[in-house]
Length: 457
Ligand code: ARG
Image (cartoon, rainbow, N blue to C red; front, side, top):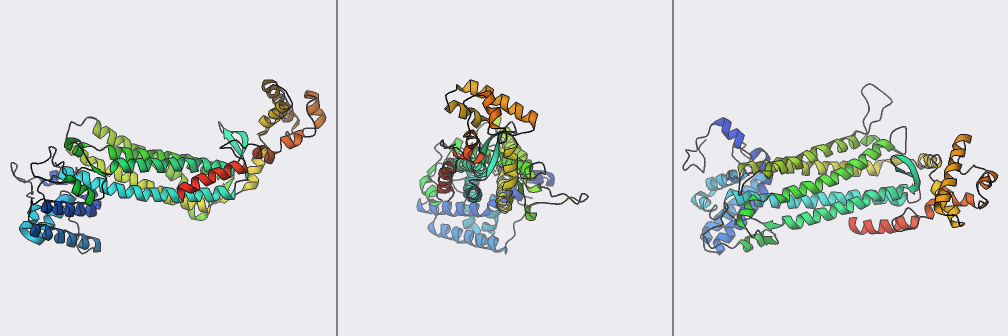
């Protein structure tokens, strides 16, 4: 097919080269951004008397009709076109004639594609952020409900100290607040307009890059035209934000998978978010959480793919950069799906406080509190730690827990022990006493809730 760019080359590329070169199958999703960018460009060209006002009006009307027709489905994107930029320009020229050929004055596809991608991705950041907030609210609601539900806290996946389920959930709430703030930072750096950088070296026309940028909602313009067309940091940065967010979802998934196993049974996922087995009738599988964990690897791959593509590229534009889009679109699509499924999964799961409490009662998670009891009575912590360790050992030997260990046996270890030891090691009291900022007491959890709710709305 003869190309609009036929000049030195005949433009008669082979079919196999056309297919290989074409990006329309994936950049077609940026049609609205491409058209809006072109409208602003035409308006600027007319305002600066680079093209006639009448031509600009024709271009803008023509572009609007293309946008309307694409939105309504009246116009179909021609998948044999080279890319979305060529397709739009071609249809425009077919519709309005020679005026359409003036649109590409003082720009290049190099700054055009960078513009479209920034406009597209900044909208995606808004959508992703809204979904993060929705998940944050679902997590906060569940945390509120379970702010006094005792749960064993783990280190090394061994029962460690008592916390509450609300406290545990709010750890994820905090991660999500950082994800949101990373996305906001990324959006700010992304909102810089590359248009007017042209192919790489700016232009001899008296353009107004600031006018075009502000018409398109950008805060500023790229201050070096070579950087303007070759910078893809904004894609890498967004994928980095998404990779971290996915890492958080993946850790959360891993816990949900553990918690819903028969070994823990702290939660039961709703049938809406689980699958059965084709052979084992007793199975209720946590496929959604497993898939989120699995897709995290895929998103890391997207990030690594683009970083690797970019690392050896000389300035300015190289066709390698066309590979940016599939990676970043895949990361964006994947994280949005994962967030949607996560909100549903978390807000419909059944929490089983009794199993959490039973597990908390079986792991000596109040042993630190036993040592602290002796410390409060005047013993140095290291000595108290040793005595408590021996008592735990005796309990295990005798099939007891700290709560059922008799007072005489306690006293055999130290005269400092008294009846009040049982209050000191009561799990609810153990949690309630942990009033340090960020701790699991109801009061501390309420402060944490207040913080995240302000952010998630
Ligand atoms: N489809 C191309 C891309 O996605 C658009 C830019 C083409 N520029 C060029 N000089 N061939 O990167």
